[in-house]
Amino acid sequence: MEKYLPRALLVAHLPDTSRIIASASKLTLSPRDFTSITGDMDYVKTEEWIRELVKRGHGSPLEHSIFIFEVICSRVCSHQLVRHRHASFSQLSQRYSDKYLRNMVTKIFEHTGRNSREAGFREYVEAIEGFLDADPGFTELLEVVAEAFIIPPSTVRLKDKESLRAIIQGVKSYYKALLNGIPYEDARYLLPQAVKTRLLVSMNARELIEVFIPLRTCARAQWEIRSIAWQILGELNKVEPLLFKYAGPRCILQDNRSRSKPCTLKDYLEGTCTPILERCPELVPREKIRECISTALII
Image (tube, rainbow, N blue to C red):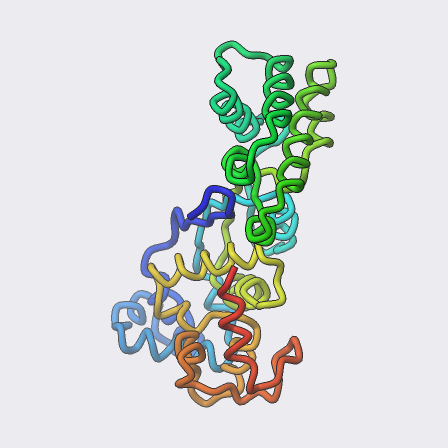
């Protein structure tokens, strides 16, 4: 994946989650103890109970799980992520770490042939000014900016040099403020929101299946958090396909709760399952839902 795009990686999860959730679902109807239930829960039974969960919208068993992701995104995106209150977050401090920005300046030193060893804020400002004065091309600007910032695909598609130059100017203002004695915690006010940040994000399957994935994989979601959501769904399907193969945008969640037999995301995309909803929550008519889901995958 290109360095200027957001990234999400599953770093830890509770093993055998699908079987635990299926067993928890059966426990609500069976007088048997959990150990006995889960001991008999083979692949076929696990799939059957999960299918019932999806169909009936039985959400509480999904909470017996944990999935932990490392996410690299912009501050624009992290502001959206933390709105998911049934999740936990640990985020890189912008007050105490400007590693991404220093990486960007180091890249500028490489392009200008300057020696970055023992360089201070003054040398940073001078290097940035020299780089911009040389009027680099779009590709060169993108290579530099990608070290510290997330760049929208529209900027790349249009080869918008001015947007990239404006970002670099913001970094120059940041280091000029530090040179003038402004503390880190105040200088960061000058940085564009596109600046990269890193988070550890923990969610249970209920938050993922009923809230985060339906909202954020939708074609109406902002492109960056939509990219994160589709990456997260891809990571989840690698480790727990029985549980997450039914997950997708809100239209899928609602349609599956109206069907006698739920369909997977793949079924909808391949056209082997046609939505029965008259329209989705975003008012897309039934005949356009498949096209809309396909569009949501394009970042």
